[in-house]
Image (cartoon, rainbow, N blue to C red; front, side):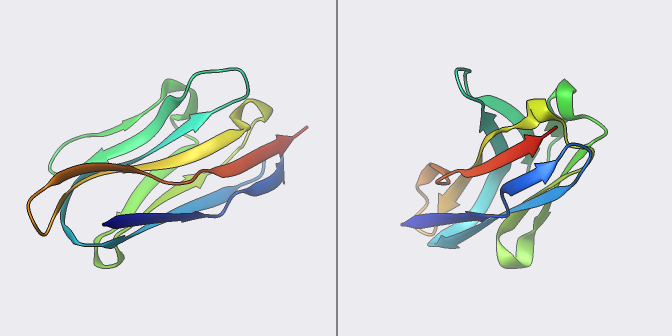
Length: 120
């Protein structure tokens, strides 16, 4: 089994910054991709940023230049640094990890979500 634990959400004023963390644990052999999605009230879940192992890093147009995704391979953790936050960034943010387990199963695992609220 693989578990994801997210942290770092909260309430921040517009223009402020937050850093989200997502730590993966369990029977992990390797990561294919690690990313962040978000879902605002009444809207569909959307990609925010994603790192593909050996491939590109993708960002939603709405966050380019403001958000930075990074990963710590030693600690199986992915981060999302969010600067210059806007009220429209308010959403529940979900970590998503695609990986192979030590038994060579391919899994896609979602975190529990962390709420980010940006006030005006």
